[in-house]
Image 1: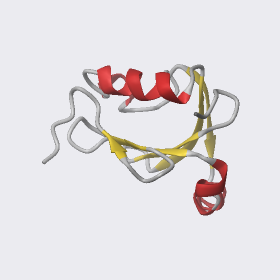
Image 2: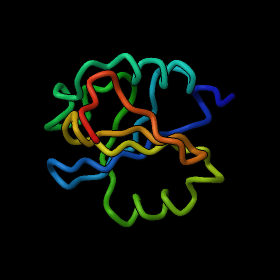
Image 3: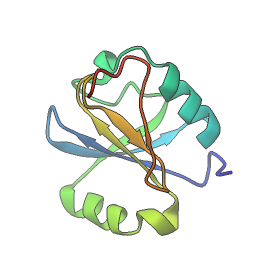
Length: 104
């Protein structure tokens, strides 16, 4: 299992078309449990900065470089927008949906 120092979450934020790195203040297992229990992504709609842990904005080139190295770095990916399309993806490509997910 990945510990909290060994992984990042790469975020593509649809609202502002911005890119972010997030180092959660929890283990990967706890991150997945936290996400699964999240009733809505609304608090993070305009910006992911309130997410628990350290969040910083990166430019598109940095984001693309991180995505290319995602498999080796064990990074998660988070598409962040609204409850119907926000999804956390594990390093192995498996999607994780939050409690309030309304997608089809």
